[in-house]
Length: 170
Image (cartoon, rainbow, N blue to C red):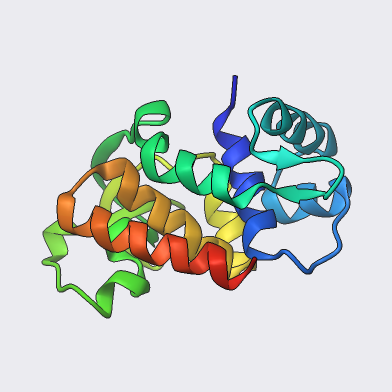
């Protein structure tokens, strides 16, 4: 069974396909241990989302899971107002397309965050730190969060942009 950190690892590899990677390097970038990364990729391989031979995610399968399954597998937990890292519709990629009131801001709770908003549980607890290190990964995770939240117009936009992001980096 896939765990939330498996999606974090797969997204990191999917948006950085030309980058050579090691388990230790991924672990450092994502705030995981090397054994967690290794286990994540083993689970992803069993689920048909990763090819050990190619050393990369199977993008068509990953896209299908992200677009149609992630919201059911990892429903978001919404909490009170907190400081954190903007995600979902509060991420800059959405700001180009939509305007939201401050009451509609979603953030991953993070003491070093720059905005306030409703707390939205990240796929994995190290997501805010990983996002700070990789802007493409940050965008991909915010798009996935929009899919997890399930608002129609943001979901349609997130599906389109996530497909583009995965294809651009294929």
